Length: 500
Image (cartoon, rainbow, N blue to C red; front, side, top):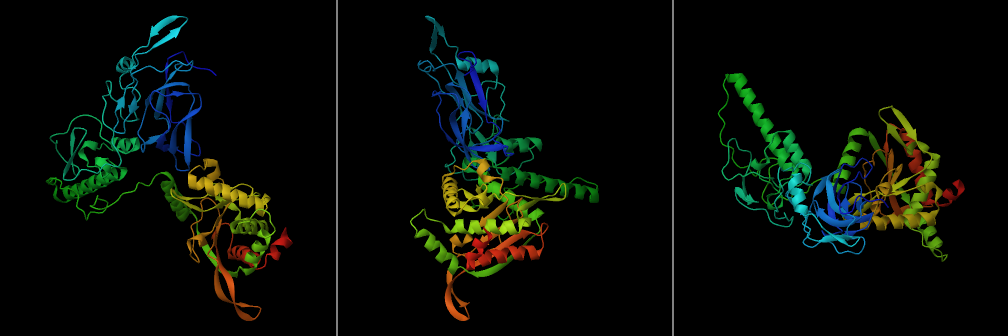
């Protein structure tokens, strides 16, 4: 286990979490400043667009600084913690007076150490970290927050504090007025402005927008991405009107003082309006579904089926005394058998190469609704599992989904999706395909209905099945054949046995 020289501070940054992820939100710190950590010990829990992840630190020693409050969104490469490598590992207590953490408002608190390390009977006074930070300038602060001198300690911005009311709100000794202004505003002072994410600060900087001229709609006046985008749209619209006026009259328009945003203006913060950022799982779902609608020419076909035979078969299987078989496992088994007969639907479209990629293995995704939003865990090699194995894997992934423990690998790589929306008490749906897959089977609730059975009217257990498919990979004949085969297996489970 290789370390740097004893006592030297190592800065650990948010690593690349894979799957194309570029940012993560701090959910919970697992260590405090002054704690002794071991190599590869998890120090923070973050939420990405894919899952909740515990991030291990590759250094061992004493934590001297933390960067970012819980709820802060950080880009990959942003500092997370600083560790004094080589201290506290031989049983020595960490230096007294240590206090360091970066606040969400952009400031950082610098660690001071008055302890001494002893080697070979000789005592060496530890160099105060504050003095080193002063010499280094800005120190380890969030991306986009750079300062030219040692940062001062500032109060934390708590997400549960109420936003200040009125046309102006005072935060961190600064007065911010509602809406963009044309001239200097009294009361503005230098220093960082509290924003929800360093990415928001970068967006404003790239468009030459002064954040001090905005009123944030977030808690305690926190500036959100929506606030910056609204200000940019308003500025662009005002510039367009000014150019049109000058082209028609040959004179520049007289600019009137900008009034606070009206409650009826689209996109403006409104009284009683709750804003929920599209980030994390919700943001990922929004991006994927929007892309699916843009790129996939989907179509849906559906059929009602008598599920009485399937329900009786499941009851007989569970009466044998072995492990209980779930209904979704039986439906998954039917899906894999149907895909073996109609492999065109176990595919995806490579738009750049203009090719259809057909897969031999079935990695079956299933929709799971959780407190964090809709996720689609993937059962690997579903075609090679029996009903008992599918039941166990569905149960494991569902539990992990509700607890937020799914890994990015368990949420990606699916080739076909099964959506059992009957658990919500609805009969049918036209779901959006889980991009980049080619099809999704939907299953409604199984409910007692009048049904003509063997020439007579009877009460049977009826279910509606729907198939949404990518019309680029197949035509209606293939899709209809797949759905009819699934319905036949639901109505007569013996059909499935003939194909095994």
